[in-house]
Image 1 (cartoon, rainbow, N blue to C red):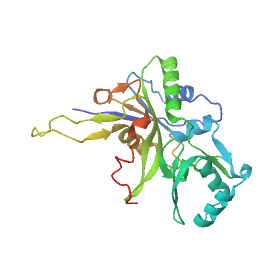
Image 2 (image 1 turned 30 degrees about the vertical axis):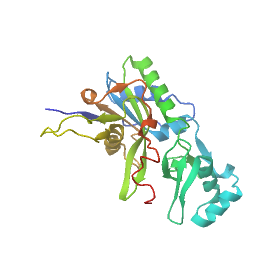
Image 3 (image 1 turned 135 degrees about the vertical axis):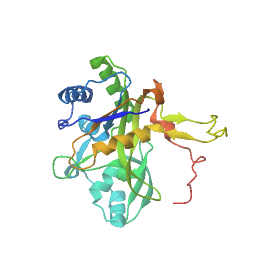
Image 4 (image 1 turned 180 degrees about the vertical axis):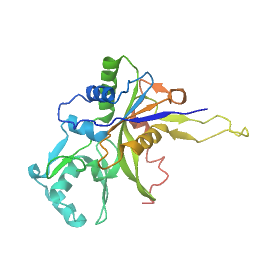
Length: 257
């Protein structure tokens, strides 16, 4: 029988700028009666990294540019908020009354550059995504190794909308210690047909699994441990979230949106 375990760490403390996320994870796990084990996958909501890294901005401190004011008029958004989005973006994909979609500085195509005010203390305060999610994941992984002596993988996740589908799902935005894909290409199926294109974005699937316990409101479970997947994934010291990004030439949906 094949199985794996999903463990949500409850009573996680509110994270403040300068906090050591790995230390908080180990301490919270201990309070939950959980010991981090070799081969665990630690899935962490991006927001606690954003808070720990001081990626919190108040609209009161933002002076909008003329471009932000123009886009704000078109979208019906606060021009100060639009200015934050522009500062975090490479390019605007779509700006309308319905939405403001951009490609952010990390190469993520998302609404509002991932800027969010949910679960952020203080009126007018918003969190920005971590500057370098892969680097945040890598540092956390090394600190967890130092604190526990266990080799684990780390996935930083965030919730995004998807084209042509209602609802939102969790995606990996930063990884360390894990190959982002489970590659079936070249393998036979049940009837010995050779699989040609199937390469599963397993880090996104793991992020979605973690979100079932994380939730989006008052659950206060920003860290989930996935245990028992070691035989089904590939640990990797060199993998990066950039491997999931496709080129314009590979984009099957170009010119359709």
